[in-house]
Image 1 (cartoon, rainbow, N blue to C red):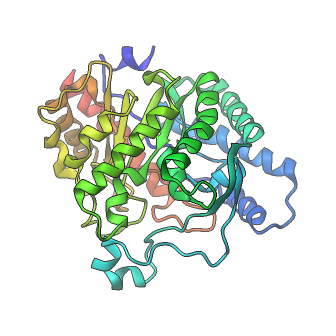
Image 2: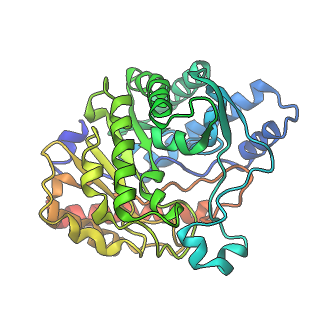
Length: 384
C-alpha cells in the first residue's frame, strides 16, 4: 500500500534521512578526505554493506518511510564538492561565521568549542555543472540492492536544496544573486529528477530556510521572510518537473545542541513552507524550544493531499523520549490538522561528518527510534 492508503489507517513513521554510519566506513572516508590511499573496491563494498545494514535496521525497528541513511555522504552538503563542476575547495583556513545572533548571545558557550556554524566548503569559479552522475548511479543501485530484502511503505533520498547549495558554495563567478540561484536550480534539478526517475522520493534538505535569520545578526524577521520567499521560488523552479507527491521538504535549526533562543519562530515560516511544491513538510517540534508551536497550525488549511512531518523525537538532547510523550506530541498535531495529515518524524538527522564524535551516540539513536515507533502505535490506538 502507498502512503495515501496507509495514512487513513494509522500514524506512519519516518525520519530526516541521515543516520549513523559504521566506524569502519567513517575511517575509510577520513582516509579519502586526507588523500591517503584507499582501495576503491573496498570503499564501495563498505558503502554498499552499510546501506544494506541501514535499511535492515530501519525496517527492523518498524520505520515506515525510510532512506539510505546517507551512508555514502560525508555530510548533508559536504557531498556536493564531489558532484558539482565549476567549483573548487576553499582554503583550509576558511572559517565559519564568527558572529551570529546565537554566538553573540552566548559567546562563552560557543567559545568552549560547541558547534556554531560551518564554513562554506567550496567556491564557484566557473559555470556550475552536474558531474555526479556516476556517484549518484551507485547510490541508487546500492539502495535498490538493499531494498530486495525490505518492504517499506516508501523510500526517499535526501538532497541539498537550492538554498543549501547557495550557502555551501561561495559565488565567485556569477556575481549576481538571481543568476547564481538559477544556475543552482538547473544544476541540482538533474540530481532531483534522476532520483525520482529511479522510483524514489526526494527530500530537499533546507536548514538554511529557517536558520538564515539566526545566522545574520542584523537581519529582521521581515527581511528573513523576504529572503526565504526568494529561495522557495528558486526551489520550486528546480522541482518543476517532479510531482509534489514525490517531494519532501525538510527545514530545521542545525544539528548542534545549543540554547537556540534566536531560532526563527515557526509562525513566521508556515506560509513560506506551504508554498513549496511538495506534499510532505518536515520540521522541528520535539526540540524544547519549539514544542509549544503545535498550536500555530490551528486554523491553517492543509490541502487534502499534504502531510506535516513534525519531529517527535529530537537530536537536541540525549534524553530518550518516553513513547507516551511521543504519542502526546503526535496527538496534539492530529487534533489541529487532522490525523491523516500527520506523519511522525525526527527533528533532524543523527549522523555527523566522519571526523566528528556524534552528539547523540548510535545506541541512543536506536533507543529514540524505538520510542518513535512505539509512540506512533500508541497514538494510532487513540486516533483510529
